[in-house]
Amino acid sequence: MSEYRPVPRPREECGICGIFGHPDAAKLTYFGLYALQHRGQESAGIVTSDGVNVSQHKGMGLVAEVFSEEILQGLKGHMAVGHVRYSTTGASSIINAQPFTAVHQGSTLAVAHNGNLVNIRTLRDELEKQGSIFQSTMDSEVVVHLIARHAHLGLEGAIAEAFKQIQGAFSLLLMTPDKLIAVRDPHGFRPLCLGKINGGAYIVASETCALDLVEGEYIRDIEPGEVLIIDQSGMKSIPPPPGLRPSHCIFEHVYFARPDSDIFGINVYLARKRMGEILARECRVDADFVMPFPDSGNYAAIGYSQASGLPLEMGVIRNHYVGRTFIQPTQSMREFSVRVKLNPIRSFLQGKRVIIVEDSIIRGTTGRSRVNSLRAAGAKEVHMLVSCPPTRFPCYYGIDFPSGGELIAAAKSVNEIRQFLGLDTLHYLSLEGLVEATGGRKDHFCQACFNGDYPVPPDRLFHKLALGR
Ligand code: SF4
Image 1 (cartoon, rainbow, N blue to C red):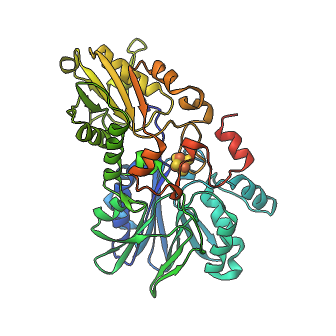
Image 2 (image 1 turned 90 degrees about the vertical axis):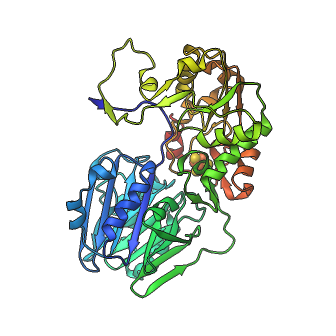
Image 3 (image 1 turned 135 degrees about the vertical axis):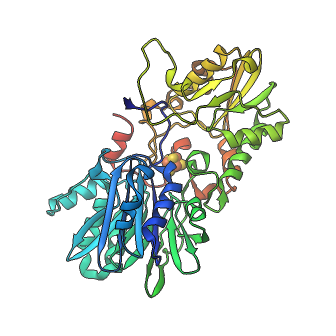
């Protein structure tokens, strides 16, 4: 058996969930992480506190694989923080599983982090020169060291000092034995929302779909640059400095977030459907029907179909039982990893003019396999519409795109990509169209992977690594 890695797709970095004031805090956090599983599948962890004692459990794998009923019962307390991880920095191993915990002056601090710090190497080098010893390669450990260095300022002062020094994308949950603290970077790259459960307990989570599963009521987003402290005395917000301009990750709407979540003030399903409607306005193609390759482009395909009047069909069928591992096929079974998951319906596709709607093209290898499979099934014409602009630049803020050199749109023109994929037509949604679909606030979104305009410049070394040099 070997690891099933069928398609080179961009990966989300992490999901976080915290509960305060509920006797079943561990179980609610478990369900919150379950809802956020799409944001990371390599490891999962929960740390709980009863106000004095801290318990934790972490493991490699999916949430349902890492936790059992018995393990959850052993995680006592009315507060918890949890994390699901896909590694963008730091190796994939249990030592890098989060939440990260450390004991400082007799008190435990747990950190669950979503995002990437862009000055991590500089900060880590400086801390090591000053005597800090690191256990892992995670960004979160640097945060813990920075807070510990300023412990003499009290918790609020230490957090404020630490967050003055770190730069990049971070939605964070911190937990001391008696406080749950939510922090969002000044640009608000990653989503983070606050909700209430049964009128008494609080939940903070990466996406609103986690609130829905535990019957939480959405209150509001944590503001970019805000620090929110929840303890027995209630909630205290340290508001962001005035004049900040958000740079929300627009790719969350294109691909990462769950369609049933509302993020950055707009529902993801509606935004994706709108992308399809705008694609229909930008590019009309004479074809027999429009189809997604499930689950990429599903909702944009619905939007395109409704706006263009072309029927929506399912020309490929997904095998829902493909697990994370399977026995590798023989060398002669070409395109196996595509076919095992998605099988074209030959009798239906024969002689048809097909429009595929995709959410993104990253390396192009998956797209080429998909087009080949439709042609092999007898499709006469294959056209592709993509619900975002060409992805030309790497992401430094926590999305695991391949290095700059591997992004197909960094090296090829749209026409060259069309030829590489074997398509009759290729059209990408314009950046203006994408911004319109996500609410029209161009100056409120990071769009750097499309236009190279980075809101926070990365460390020189970090930059080189991301470019794959
Ligand atoms: Fe999101 Fe792209 Fe900006 Fe990264 S570079 S934060 S993926 S919009």
